[in-house]
Amino acid sequence: MAQHIYRSPQSRDDILDYYLHLAEDNTAIAEAFIVAVDERLDALLDQPKMGVELTFRPSELHGMRMFRVSAQFDRYFVFYKPVSDGIQVVRVLHRARHIAALFDPDSSS
Image (tube, rainbow, N blue to C red; front, side):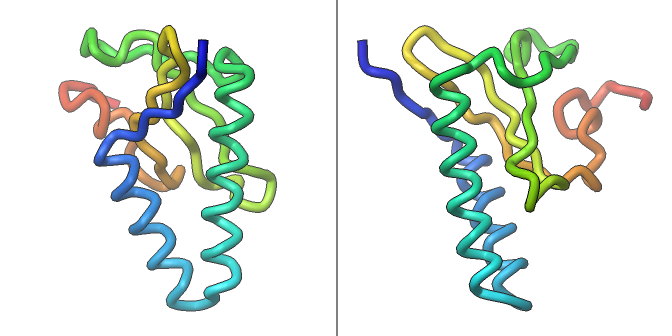
């Protein structure tokens, strides 16, 4: 069975936003970010259980995992869920974001 990477609209927006932000200072770094994200997604497709499993209350987030984009972009994380025929990319976020609040608005942390 063919494996697929399904990107949510939010994850596409995240990647574009970070690309544009990085490109303000250095286009080469922004391009390297895109390459790093694509390489990480390919690696996660091959080994979908590689990331750390997270626990959030909303049932649609059960089974979600996270893994950093790369050593160069170690402040950026891919949030994804393994699915029967690949991975579903939920978000790509910088670690400075309040992750718990983004995924679980009722979170008090």
